[in-house]
Length: 552
Image 1 (spheres, helix red, strand yellow):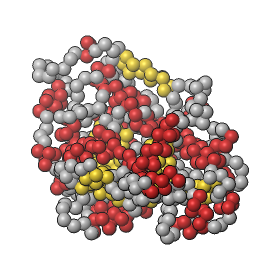
Image 2 (cartoon, rainbow, N blue to C red):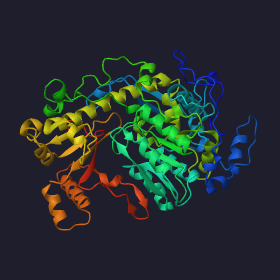
Image 3 (cartoon, one colour):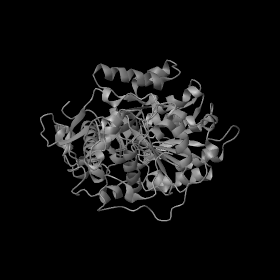
Image 4 (spheres, rainbow, N blue to C red):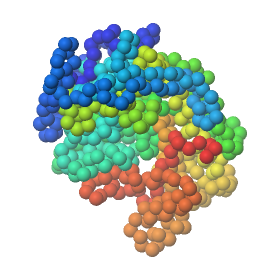
């Protein structure tokens, strides 16, 4: 079985002084096996994996498995220097910054106090991967995510792309409808589109998926099989940057209970949640930091004046769907890609035992367990000889501060380069229906520059946006109805003038060495070679603030 524990005192590598106990008297997950597809129901255990289990018994003389002898592996040890979890990451972004790294090492063979070893890490093993790392993560999930049912399990994978592919391959039949966000993660669609599945877009606003639209879709569904899978990125949504509130998550979860829908919670940005952005130009009239090239966030310290504690970090995060899940209908995809590096290719499922066992069967005959190098390194990094449980959370705290500063920097630049104001009430109503927090005009053409004429404001408005509360992306919506190039395209009778305009502007920006992600990349696939119809007279771009620095 994938990893589950009953006695938390058996866990290793954990700092227990501030132990957060699981919720008492939790129910067990319900039987959701009717959601499994034909392929998944047909899978049987890999017989070769039974050999591995018996080979580990003390005194066993194994002539069964074709395992290479570890003495013939060319590696003798691995020595690494890593940041201490409390490292000031704002300084580490400068190439000349100094730090006091920690040393960690992994030897070829186990020794007292050093069970992690290369001989085991680089050998064939079961599809579960490392039991030590799985144990650590099970405890981590109990303390941080706090599932609302008792028999959740952990299964390692190669990261969320691999995980989502496996979810599709245990739950979906060819041609199935899948509930997705109105603007959705592009690569997620590439998994199921070749199966003939089609996306069913659910409305989004600046705060994420709109529960009422989800209910409308499910309650009015006619004809073919109703969708039974919802794919959702609840924190720092890719591409829009929106973050669901706890209230919305509760509504969405109960709708999914009502209509028997499985929730796939793809949440790579969970620990990069942020406080609300407050523009300096709106709060105190001072010029935004972006206008003078400052590398400081506009709100001072990214985590405020607070001193890190485990409880403070956890309480500051919007609880996950899995924390609301009393039935086991949420499959949560967790990854180290955004926090420890995407090249690790390591993540894990949090799900009920039935789904976990079927995912394990699929893993045995496809990818097998994640690579030995990333497992060994991360196990050593977060274990009791490295950061430990509290150190890992302290690292997340520091990351959140840095990405908050980067979010602030990008928003400050927009305020410096354009006339930006909170969206006026009249623009929220009627034909415009703007839901973003801010609207943007050329310098000198905002409300203070041309008066309060509604007509003039509409003609001069360029784009709207909301400052993200998590993740790595800012999403802008451009209004094209008064743009001369767009008007010319429409006059020429172009069938898709928005797409042509978007591509033209995108290429012009590339020529100026600025690369954005076109919004059309994130348009839902709703059928073979068919994309969802998008709003007329607008275009979208996604801006990532995660990679470039102020001094670029």
